[in-house]
Amino acid sequence: MKYLSLILVASFLLSCAHQSSSSIKSLNGKIQLHIEVDENSALKYSIDFENEAVITSSALGFDIENLPSFGKNIEITSTKIESVENEWTPVYGERSKVKDHYKQAVFLVTEKIEPYRQMEVTFRVYNEGVAFNYKFLAQDGIDSI
Image (cartoon, rainbow, N blue to C red; front, side, top):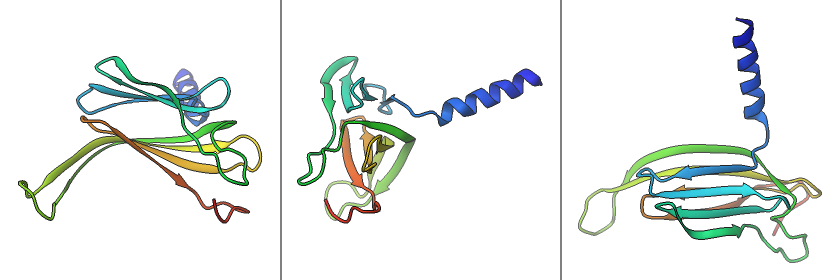
């Protein structure tokens, strides 16, 4: 029992630690997305198709007028990964229902230095490709970008 408690506590502590990398595969396993914070604290991604690199390590971030660039001195402070299986109805077309199946990862990214900005980067990994978007979160002292 003592060892079980120790293992549970260690697992909890490891799950709370900041991640520096993560990988997600498409539902069919052919596409793999890699996200990492490199040795310079920059957020990067790469994509493999059938174990061949199609997009090599590429930086994510923004140069914002009148503010410091956002994409360096950052850390991934949380990650949420899920599989999604939806259907939607097109206005016109050959099919009455369209399948929308993918794996999604939402990364909360936080600056390690002032002004400690945050954003969410969401990736969707489909069997056919990868999509991503940025979401700037409301933050004290920042009312526009």
